Length: 87
Image 1 (cartoon, helix red, strand yellow):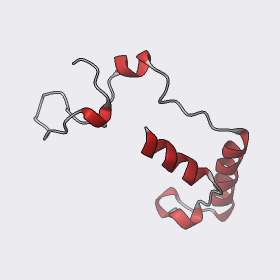
Image 2 (tube, rainbow, N blue to C red; image 1 turned 90 degrees about the vertical axis):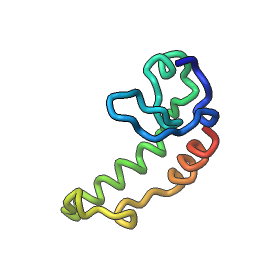
Image 3 (tube, rainbow, N blue to C red; image 1 turned 135 degrees about the vertical axis):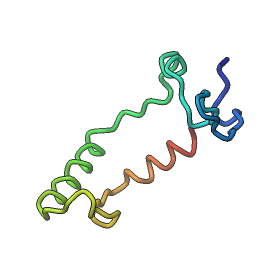
């Protein structure tokens, strides 16, 4: 399949034993050809994630019971939302 931006690909119903045709389906050759899909977290963003995980572990929450309010991040959700929206 020739490369086409994900937003321009048609989403089609799945057919058993056939390749998925979906804008969310990334092919290995597409990933290898470009690096504009990579977002490297800053030190502060990594620290936010580590602190959120530490808080979960200190409270002893089982992974099945973790909710959005249990995993608080400062500005990272907005950054990731912008990244996903603009990609």
